[in-house]
Amino acid sequence: MFMQIAIGAIGIGIVLMVGYLVIAQVKAALPTVDANTTAALNSTQATVFAGFGLIAVGIIVLAAFGLINIFK
Image 1: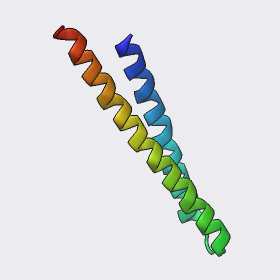
Image 2 (image 1 turned 30 degrees about the horizontal axis):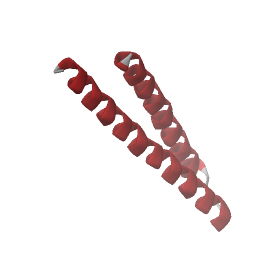
Image 3 (image 1 turned 120 degrees about the vertical axis):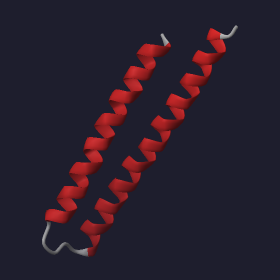
Image 4 (image 1 turned 30 degrees about the vertical axis):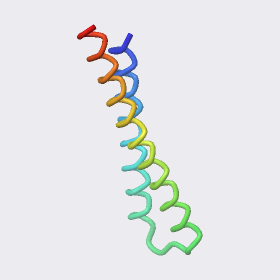
């Protein structure tokens, strides 16, 4: 059970990483963007980065529960 959830969390983390890289490449490829577009891209990158943190916390919690169950 824990392994399946951890693999799922890693998969979501990979999707978030690819999304972050795509947004960063789109931002770099646009020659001159107005302030609204820049703000929207920065907000999207911040949201994806927050998702990275949530995935990391989830993996740490799952690892802790896994260790607790192993040493019970």
